[in-house]
Length: 174
Image (cartoon, rainbow, N blue to C red; front, side):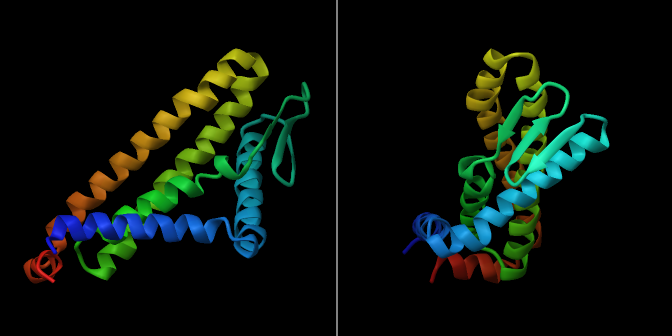
């Protein structure tokens, strides 16, 4: 099997496994829900740190000034984007050490941008629901995708410069 075909098949397999694991009730209850609560707490803490007066209750950030609230749901946690980007990194023909670095770098890029997304939506929604809906459904989806693309391209460039020729040749010719 050629390297490109192998990488595409591995990517598809990793995506399917990642999403299957994410929706398992045990994982949802013991990992996804606490992760969402943590992302909500970090976002609310940043809002408070910069004078935004927010109250965090589990997965909801509410303005103490006007009552507007955002709820961080399953699809808003950034985990789906992390699963996709990790699948791409893991399918790339390089060393496992470089893959581990790629998973960390790309995951932090996505999750950091997602926190910025949540904070910005908290502020946008206080001023205009029309703009909130647009930013939530369109602008931020594109920005998260671009962030993931830039992160993975930077990592690929880094990985290619450090991948031994034998590792990439082995990956291309199993």
